[in-house]
Length: 215
Image (tube, rainbow, N blue to C red):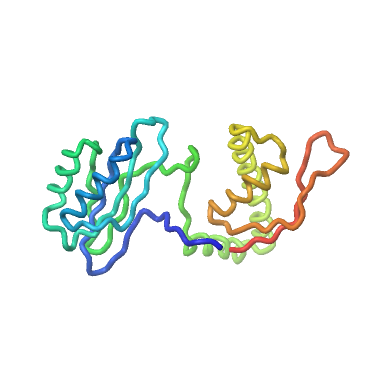
């Protein structure tokens, strides 16, 4: 079973007053409870919470979207109270685009596993693929095929690098344990491996596999 997870860093709640906060929080078990207690005290409801890994183990960046419709203090006062807890620092307010819509316009660039990342939603990538096929016919289909092949090779290098960092060396194990999970992590779908093995008689191992993907 899988569960939908929204990575959009935007919140749309028509009819509600929203605000966003981006701050650095201490790596302390009491830090996050201190933040949520301050928000609850003033009836500010956290609707979205995301943290980002950091090489600095003492702290890490956090993004929060709050429903402040019932909040009994201005957002600026809530920020001052959060700062007074000593649990957070470098707080910046993300103002809503309009009542009911807030978008993270502070975080840049986006990264995933240390690499630059771009979020492509279905409305965009479906039109891109359809447009290439319509405009270029079989040439467009070939472009998409070989483009996908080269992307796969690039992703494979990333998977191997991550796997080797934690002691995984065997190509089959890297595919089975890292690549299939990363395929779903990136939003492409889910891979069901039917057969997985290495071809004999080659100096370098390759991985022929039969698999079904579920979008």
